[in-house]
Amino acid sequence: MKTHEWARDDGDSVKVGINDYAQDQLGDIVFVELPEVGATFEKGEEFGTLESVKAVSEIYMPVSGKVTAINEALTEAPELVNQEPYNDGWIIEVKPDDPDEVNTLMSSSDYLEMLKGEE
Amino acid sequence: MKEFQGTSGLIFNEPLLWEKGKKGRRGFSMPRRDVVPSPVDEGLAGDGPDFPDLSEVDVVRHYTRLSQWNFGVDSGMYPLGSCTMKYTPKVNEREAALPGFAGAHPLLPPELSQGALELMYRLERYLAEITGMDAVTIQPAAGAHGELTGMLLIHAYHKSRGSHRSKIIVPDTAHGTNPASASLCGFNSVPVQSNEKGIISAEAVAAIMDEDTAGIMITNPNTLGLFEENIREIAEIVHSKGGLVYGDGANMNAVMGIVQMGKIGFDVMHLNLHKTFSTPHGGGGPGSGPVCVKNILEPFLPVPRIIKEGDEYRLSGEFPESIGKLQAFYGNFGVMIKACSYIISMGYEGLKRASQLAVLNANYIKENLKDSLYLPYNRPCMHECVFSDKFQEGEKITTLDIAKRLMDYGFHPPTIYFPLVVHGAMMIEPTETESKEDIDRFIKALKSIVAEAGKDSDLLKRAPTLPKVRRLDETAAARKPRLAG
Image (cartoon, rainbow over all chains, first blue to last red; front, side, top):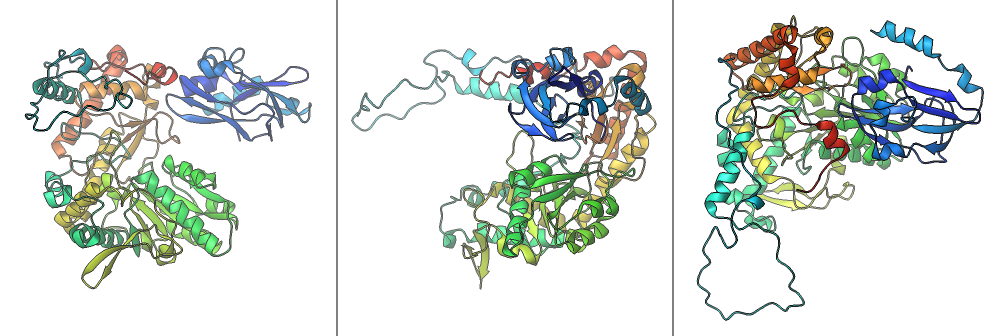
């Protein structure tokens, strides 16, 4: 399944968010449903939802692991996902079951190529 | 623009009722007191409610002015896809207003409610005949309530056979409430993607149907306005693994008198009386979502059920396998009266004709607009057609802009950004009650908007300019809702 999350290896943990293309397609995000800290998910499993003025979309785990932090700021300011999808608009932080799994994900350049194919 | 219905005519401003009136003003005269005053114990009395002091004319003008800001089926074409906003004949309102019906109290005993019970009993029989099913409950209050009822029935059926199934298959072209209803009943909804023709393929269902799946929820015609042609085959696959087939009949307006859902594999389905069978709706109801079932599910129908013994009608709770009661009293009776009146006044031929015209009107719009707006599924549709804003992408014009501009032309916008399978969807359902002249005006309006998009896109970005209220900040409303005045 092709989904539009990004994952960044921060050493011990992996930060997860949605990318610029996804936030642009969704339009103004008005609500982010976050998981509980401590919850565990498999890769590809739905861990939350994003609600925009147009639609509700699921967000999927890029790697299997345990949620170690959630971006609480999104509760009050969901627009951060639109404004800063790669920085302040991060969604969760995960401790991956397998630290190498993050290296198996699609690279950003391959992703951009894939988008070109979509359009 | 002159030939269009949108107008810049006089629109009254109107303040809140609390900003009107004057202390001590009142709208009625109290009769002279003929008993000794007896004040309430002070411990029980508090401050009175914060009501404004108004005269009758203050109130009448207030609500008349507000109603003039509004747009409804009685003021113009309302092609809101999937909602079947058709004109509802006033004769049905008159029947529902008959004092014997309107004044009936729900706590009256059955012997004093024979007329009401007979109407409900007959309506159940009519709906069974129209859908080709065996038994009906008219208790659910609206469509999603009907879906939940259907899910509870399917759960009760499997439970009675000692089987516990956890999944329900829901295609991406089903109504958005379907997966929610399945989840509310405790099922996991399993999505299945529609194929390149916009319908579900039997192979896709066969690939995921298993012994842990309780059934499938299919909206037919689906939310792309397309008939699920593989329905018989899909039903066979689901039945062969012991599952049941649920039909969302919200789009029944396309197939009345033409398709009997019970004959093409559905075991249980709901209808939306407020859509298909003539009740003004939108703005929250009231609705009515009867559920029609095959014999195998009849024992589980909600109680009380209306039964006929000789010439007498009564409510019976003597169905031990029933899923129970779904709400206070017996459902939204006013909607039932209108539906019954509609069915009787239309007759078999009339209902069939209504569906034929609903389908013809949608296809007429589809054919006339497919060069102006992108049509993702270019094939005959049912009662609604789905376009997108793909042709307008170069001009940076979105579906939202087109919908807003349509208001300036005097039409209610279509459903937008749904179904989700079409990016930037515009879902148009004209219904059977629009004349060719009105539909032609609608087509012309959309063509004119498409032309504007190429020349002066600012006209669309600023739209609407003629209604009382300009474009609302939906984002701010959703992020920072102000729920009190």
